[in-house]
Length: 163
Image 1: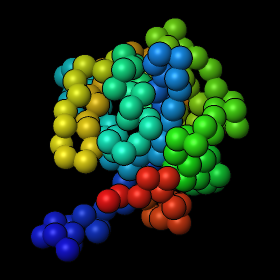
Image 2: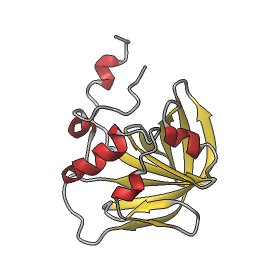
Image 3: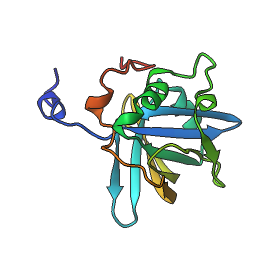
Image 4: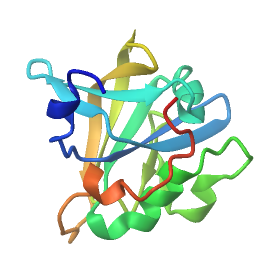
């Protein structure tokens, strides 16, 4: 156990689905590392595992989409968190989505989302941070319920377990 485990173990962050498209490929994954990281200008960072197919697509993408889920969207979280897409599975064949003018893919059933232009990629070990400049955002009308958090997703076996 690391010295930070006592602190980190108390956290229960929101979970996000991050989608990326580049070079005719599309990918998406469930992400637990993400946060607003600047007020002026507004910036948000999502951290993608280097082991993840979404990371490999996001490396070539100019824009990423970040989606919030509610607790009752556990099946959607399992699709994006428990399957890698490395085996040829097209996760987008199982969800309603739309392509934005920026080329980003937005999940239509997400209660809220934003598209961000990648302004910085920063290597932090086994994850790379994608700092995003939000350029578009939306909410699904009538979407309610508590957000999906880490504690809600603990039963999802990750497609790429942490090494």
